[in-house]
Amino acid sequence: MQRRYFIKSGAIALATMGLSPSFLRRMTYGMALPGAAKGKVLICLFQRGAADALNVVVPFGERSYYQLRPAIAIPAPSSSMRSALDLDGFFGLHPSLAPLKPLWDKGLLAPIHAVGSPSSTRSHFDAQDYMESGTPDVKGTTDGWLNRYLAASGTCEQCKVSPFRAVSMAPQTPRILQGSAPTVAMDSLAQFAVRSGGDAAARLEALYRTGSADVVHGAGSEMFDAVKMLRSANPQQYQPANGAAYPRSQFGQRLLQIAQLIKSDVGLEIAFADIGGWDTHVNQGGVQGQLANRLDDFAQSIAALTLDLGDRMENVVILTMSEFGRMARQNGNGGTDHGHAGSMFVIGGGVKGGKVYGKWPGLAPEQLFEGRDLALTTDFRSVFAEIASGHLGASATDALFPGYTNGSRLGVLR
Image 1 (cartoon, helix red, strand yellow):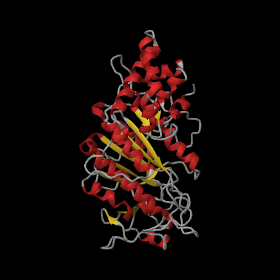
Image 2 (cartoon, rainbow, N blue to C red; image 1 turned 120 degrees about the vertical axis):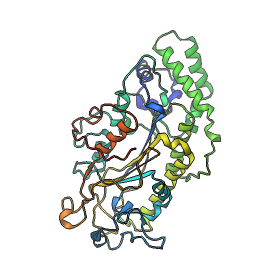
Image 3 (cartoon, rainbow, N blue to C red; image 1 turned 180 degrees about the horizontal axis):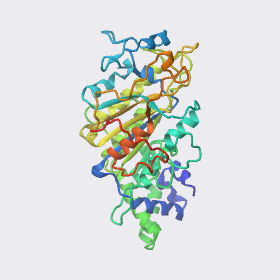
């Protein structure tokens, strides 16, 4: 059985087709890996398609911004709801990100501007691959940087980690989690529970109880116990806490299920979800329109997740990313073309929020990258390395990002 087929099909459904020794070896290896200290969780959210950083975190204090975007720029903050939400007198949030403003006010939200990959590629596929592999302009990397974290966290005989240590809410494993350390991808918890029930679960339990004390026996035991834990959470009956209302969108429902996994205490350490629709070449819009609608779903979903998790956010960091930004000047179709530097959000109880991080390069003609894009001042690997070490406790981030020697940190974590 191929690993990707297992992941796509939903874990325990494999019991109806037999168990591969190679799969079980990977599971056993994974069981020996220690988890992050104190139940830390990292939630990575990928905005696929290249989100327009300049209209997400709006530099309304930059005169050139309005000269470059006469039709799609977000107005400077005012009493109107059709203007940027002031953060610090220079930057503001797009008004569709209003659900995230309370997180800024509470010091839980840290935007990072002019951040991204040093690669100059304008290819979606390559840029996403570089960001997820953690090796810009190196196409030969076979694993993702988060999988390298999982595999390099060390081993010990006493440590046992749930098969749900790293979960992506997706039909197949994203590039960022591909590698030797085992991970699980699933479309939904409800489907996983259904596939794990009935004859499949009974066959797996029978295999465990009658198997010899070999690798099959050990891995079957751990997987069966983990599935029982997950099923006990009753995905179909889950009620979000604190009045949280998730959008009915695919992204909103994926974040709801991540919250459920965290609350179910099944050993989740890394969660991943993505959201498409950010490639706004045509009719991007400003305060209203295509981008505004996408940001509304994005913000409402994240706000619901943080509200639902409540006090658990003290041990959670949410990291958003997109493969690159978009051209500083609007195009002739009312949109923006592929650019260079972008923006990220870091959210959590351990985040030093209430500040926009990153050196602002400016938008004057001589300040633009290749004369057209927001210039890069923060390498995405610096952000990822800080979160891996400061939040998850990784001790050797050079192993996560081979070839990256700049150890500077922005200081986004407390």
